[in-house]
Length: 369
Image (cartoon, rainbow, N blue to C red):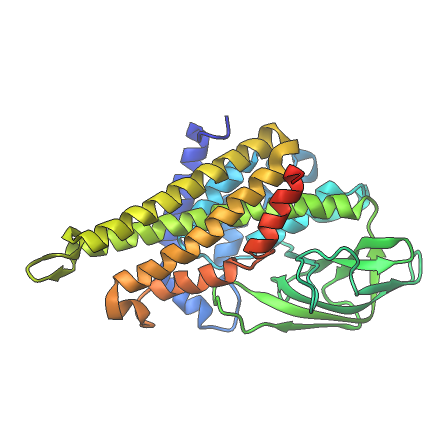
């Protein structure tokens, strides 16, 4: 069962953990976010190529590994724990959207390239002034037909939009809302990287001005609903790993930081906060495991399970990351310490692909409440 990691999943997690420690430790993460690029190209090439993470849930017929969502969750936990900058989440969501559509030519063209890491994909759905991550009727408009379709409008908070070779764009056309394929170098396409709170996550504002696009065949609403579930599961997995990293970091500090002749971990006020951090992580991780179980065994229950996991992990991580900074005292607020990176990651992740209220609304909708 996906609720309990198999030996293979544990082995995958350990492999990714060692890779992060060797190739993307926090000093290296600092170098990357202080540079011109959104991520380390060599690290991404190794993650996608050597470890095969980009193609984990892509079926073998499209060049992927055909693995489970539990496998993906095991890997994302370790990447989240290390705050590794990469376009993996953006590529996973792009692949998920393609797999949920009925456009076989697009699948056979794009999925193998996404699986090997040679192509970065981005999903462009959010719009200015729209509370929902995925609008019911997007303001971005598609005009024309056949091979003469163009898009006009603006998308915001597009994960790895500035690095993407292709974008899947939700737009309103003659037949209603649909998904369209746009090449990263298309005419009339303007991409501006955002100066976001979280320096480890690359997002962009994307503007379309008569930009050529190709309609993708299939039920776009159903595909995006599936992508919303996948986003919740993947983000919750990253946040579960980061929460545990915060707990581990703070527990170790509480053992070695002395005041009045004894470690601060001996004080009740610190013990209680650490116990609360553990409880938040344990509850969130249990919800995440149920979501991965549903994804692999009972897809009909994934929507509710993934929304519940996301609501728990995002709020729990935000609180735990804040406590991590506070329990480290003055040093926790400084650039030299890693605690503030987790806090910034938690702040941004709390609203990524829909904030807490959005997730609770989604959970209620999936439960029929």
